[in-house]
Image (cartoon, rainbow, N blue to C red; front, side, top):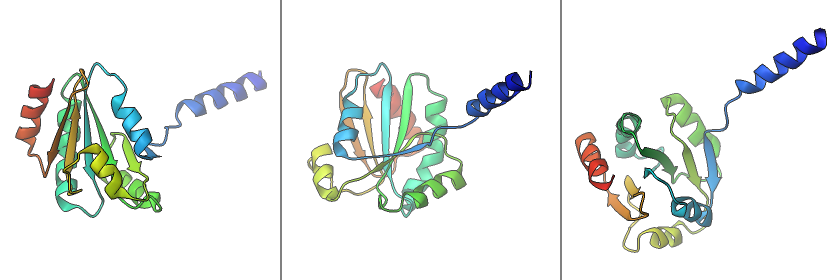
Length: 155
């Protein structure tokens, strides 16, 4: 009986462990992820902990996407990948629940041009990938109203 209780406790304990909400990946990993077919509109929001406009738009990006069926959101951090604990602490403090990807590249300028040839790297920036795989890239802060409009346009 005691063995059954221990097993049950162990089983239930694992059920409450949450996966790490942040992953680190290089450009090839990022490219593979965005090229994977999906039935949903995918939104990749590029940001950093030091970017005030990025931080301003993150809460309503989360709420709009949560309220819109058929959309998925990933926050892609451009912070220094040698200090992932800073990003993780920031995300936990703000209470964001969307996946966080931390891009790990020695030469960020190289992958920025691979993603969007004429992108200067200015953030915030947002990549929308439709179910058909078509990409739409926007630089600068997007208002909540504009975000809703873009989602309806690209869905």
